[in-house]
Length: 143
Image: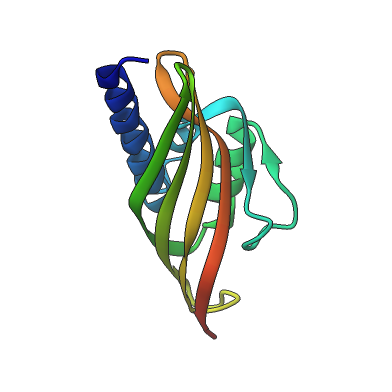
């Protein structure tokens, strides 16, 4: 892969990840589905999920469903992106999130820190997340 093509792919992957965070925080279910590949896997079992979720629509439904009544702010930092072929890539993004639950929720506030370990595929003319794995370094909660 030519240097300019590799750099363009890296920038496009950063844009995909930025949209992922914005769509989560704005509760945009269809936008969120659009950043995942058709057969994507969401695996946050090291963080807060019991089992992985498979497929873009199931992932978008799951994320927006668990965030009903929750205000969120997600930030991604320090992208490490490796283009592994003209149509595949791996990335690690440092992350931080803050979540506030409506009154009566299981907790009132959570502040988390960790990393997204991801795989990407070039699908339908865009870079899409094919694997989204979250690992957390620390979680602060208020009850």
